[in-house]
Image 1 (tube, rainbow, N blue to C red):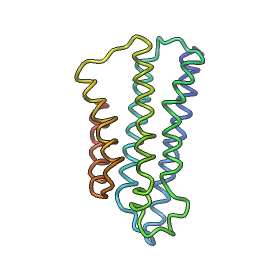
Image 2: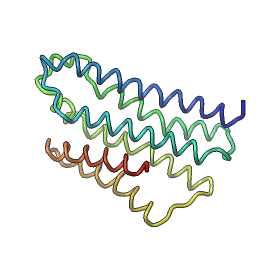
Image 3: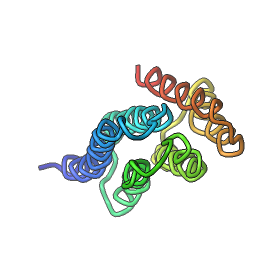
Image 4: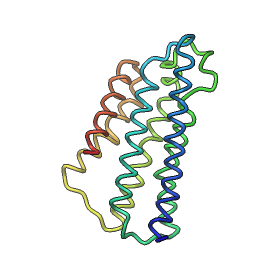
Length: 179
């Protein structure tokens, strides 16, 4: 096993936990849909998180093949992967059937979610630049809009429709960004 394979196995395991948590959360939403208004924010957040995790997984696979694997690489990997695990764990309430609306649950925690979702790409961007990578002006604009502008607006704008549109836009942009 190469050093990269060892590292990527660890990174993939942590990201895989987040992906599994979202899948389990979608199952929970399915179960409570008869008694609780699920809304659209949590499903859209799940799509955004999944697409975001896949994007970082693909980036790591393509960009880290020749990076020296050491403690710094593992710490960066944790900064990239662990926020997904945290968000995927807390985004679905354990007592979903006790909430009238899961959009309201999301809105009560949206500022923390937005901040946490900015951490992975920020850490990955810093690492990429630290290892000698660079970005074109177009890539810088994409990162600013997708990673910072929309989430920061949503942190301060506590409007349900703004969050629905923002999460849909973020999901679409990250999926577009993958291709």
